[in-house]
Length: 172
Image (cartoon, rainbow, N blue to C red):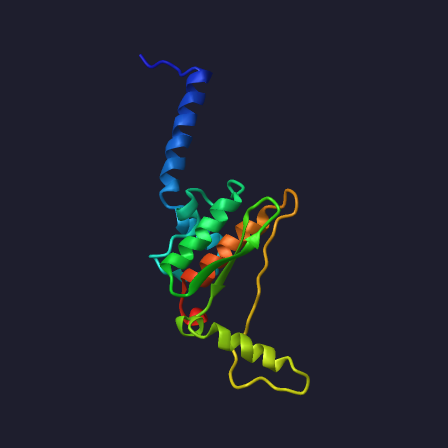
């Protein structure tokens, strides 16, 4: 004898079926850093696998939590430790005694001659002078927090990762 399923039983079976389908489809989706990189960076962009992404370093995807200042600084220090493209320095402290980090990202050859590059840039600012030779471009990317605006720190982590760990012609 075949029994008819009650409404509650049908609803329960429907939920089980939806759960199985969802879990099955999740296996087809990108996960972890791959998913985050696809969201934040251009398609087909590659990274040096020896450099941890912000998500790998922090243990959560960017935007999931507000990243504390000490973790921002620690990530910048880790990038400098792992890559010959980056150097870390603190240029002071805030009134709350937090370090003010500067991550300098350039080629290893330029790191060896930063003072000469600085002097060349200063000389090119003298009225009537022209830049000497092929001076590298200098860009200062400043990130800060005003009140509850923590997106700047999160963007700094992603930008630093892109500049330090990115591979290919744009980074050579």
